[in-house]
Image 1 (cartoon, rainbow, N blue to C red):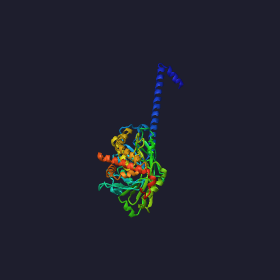
Image 2 (cartoon, rainbow, N blue to C red):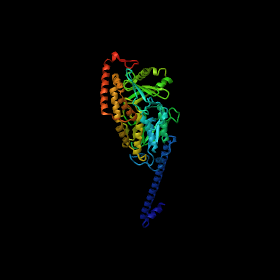
Image 3 (tube, rainbow, N blue to C red):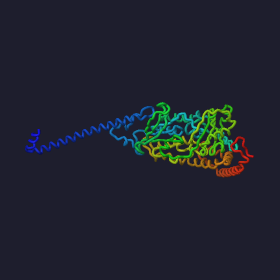
Image 4 (cartoon, rainbow, N blue to C red):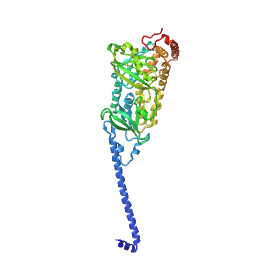
Length: 515
């Protein structure tokens, strides 16, 4: 063969033929190598596609294993590139939202989202949660949120404000025949709102939210890590992952979602409540009546309450500045209520943190906070149910609007639409109640002035209108001046009383009186 190759080269034109043959062999080798490379690349892409399908299949959604996503089914495209979607970009699927927390804030958020076609998950760890809450809701909430009468335990149209010296002022004479404060049990109200959200299309997950992460960066999806109590041993739950685009934190004062976005700390109160079963005769006294007690003995910075429920009363108190003494304050409120609840049986004891002001940060990226997680509890009155539900609804409406009913990706600017509307509408309410608490809860003398002021019909009408309908009621200039004068007079008399408090007045004890 070697001789033949040499002979060939020695033929006329043999060298050129050899060079041509060598070039053809090189081209053939390159073609073969290219084909092999392409085959290997195709094999690698196929293997990667199969791997991603397996991973997607292991990520569980509510009701079973998550089906492979459209991303996992699309061949030849990088997963990270597919996952990262810029704000405002159109989607070929519905926007996915996880709502953490199944109270009024979370349930009302989820209901609006699901109703408008967004893929919505509602994660709640305790479906029978009984939050230590007075359970009072304003009349406007019943109409606005279409609440049925069967979840309202009592229609309260009379209240007693009871001062540190046990001076009682009856409130409610200015109410109309169909005006009242609704009294609810949180386990009943919350379940109704969750069930309604589920009927609208929400996927409800009974599980403990553990943590969240964005594996592909700030414009990538959120992976929610949840221990599903409906699976596993029922105690710790089965670890699962839910992948979403947007997260709404409605998980209360100790919000893990707030921690995930570094939302900042806030002062919080400890609310403590005992549910007490009293005799039918004693229950008749509270048929449409609620009591509020003020005084250093029941709370140094809040009030104690006796609110009627379906077949029992909720007796509780709260404090920010002396949380370790909460049981002493609870004992005092029982003593102040006295004979009216005497002989009753404690059927449940509840305690929970309640925020005192909005968090420093309530929006970050594609995450928003609502309800207690955002800090929406008013000072002075401690009201939070309506504001929780309202904030959830406003947040959801902003997401629906800015995402064009789930067809486009949303970002921080879109979520801030909710925040700007909220602050504009309710900031004055929070500020006024903050001032009232600082003025009238600072001492027993100031509390005496507060109770005295509540005796005025004009004050009652303004207060009830503002509470029942969540509007800042405009007053008349003449009556406002009169109110200012009366308020100053009450504070002056109370401060004068404070001077002789130690000698002549027993504050916060039954039967106390002014000498």
